[in-house]
Image (tube, rainbow, N blue to C red):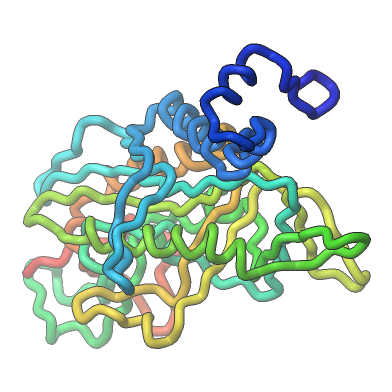
Length: 347
């Protein structure tokens, strides 16, 4: 682009060569605009930033649409391991991988996000694959702990691994504003129209389908070893992002660089597999391209490091998938010091 004008110099040598290569009548400016709006340049930038942050990267990552059976692709998938060496204890071997599933979009039109009035609790975010459902069975301790039977405990509760490891208060989970919906503001003459269908189909739908595929593909637990993956769906956008907050005023709008979107599943999909529990909603982080490097360095990777640290400290309990806790009282939730009190279930 010509500096300061926002327009390109179509008389330069590169454009002359490009014009000679393009079909007759295809304008180089229009060609450049189409490439930029497609998101491909942003995709390359995101892939490079992931590589520089230590992620292993796949571009045009292929997955299967479970509804249609069709082959589809996601722009970028990056995986990062807090430790290259698996951790071994008497209970088995474990490793951890953060998987970022990324779709990129560029637009001159703003994305408008509406703050959720009653956001859900993110007890299963990020989801954990590689240990069955990602839920742990917690029961009160019985006897002296030398022998345990399923019938001996009066009740049990199911607790997500991330909650058991006390990660729900981490900044990565609590920092972004949660949004219930978002639209794209498109000018129509002097008016502005809002379109919610286009961003849903272009961003949320492919990410939730890819997330479901990734989650189920890595779900199996192999004996005493576990490769725990934490998939995170991210839409990286190079476009104005505007947050509309709940307010007594007609509109309280402000720029934003990172929001978390809740994508509700239809009721008949909550238990859409016979073997695995699926959550009531998916989560998609929407991050501005200018914020993506900080998103990785200040939030995603620190969360992965803390998850790994907590896992290695309490690995036998996690790999057991079921624990006993001294002093657990029905209806009162986990004790404040439950990690110190938890013991792996002995079958």
